[in-house]
Amino acid sequence: MSDQSILSLPDLARSITEVAALEGEFVLRSGQVSNRYFDKYRFEGLPHLLRPLAKAMSDLLPPETEIIAGLELGGVPLVTALSLHTGLPAAFVRKEAKSYGTCRAIEGQDVAGKKIAFIEDVISTGGAVADAHQLAIQEGADVRAVICAIWRGEGNPAIQGVPNLPVYPVFTRADLEPK
Image (cartoon, rainbow, N blue to C red; front, top):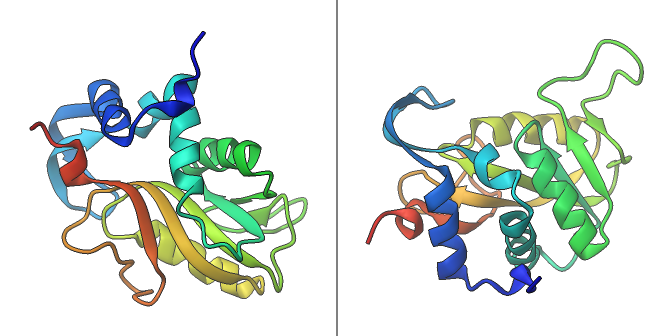
């Protein structure tokens, strides 16, 4: 078996598009309607794509990152693969704190006082990231950046509600459009 982690970015983009781009009418989390949808689970569940994607995401991490935090649900496989690739501890960010057990919104690591990077799958406006940012701040985290597989939003990557939080995408929508 060859080392699939050496896929070039253009080859990885093409492969992700082949398995994950769906045509139709889709309502996004932001409420926007799109005729093209990237089904993250179709590429996040394939090791031959997840491995090189984790490598590409690792290249975008700020060097001071102490913990990588994947957003529920699509960020969880990505942060797990990235943790295996980098050796950085992974945390898992729920949509809200659970009402039982630890009653925490961020599981797996204590993020208080730590420099963390969020790991997300596909971002259009960043609503889920803004929500997670608020939860992380409440737990005392120092959120340094968001690394995402795909930025499908308009213009330069930015999170509505947290405009100073840098967003580093592996791919933009344009990278995944048919040529």
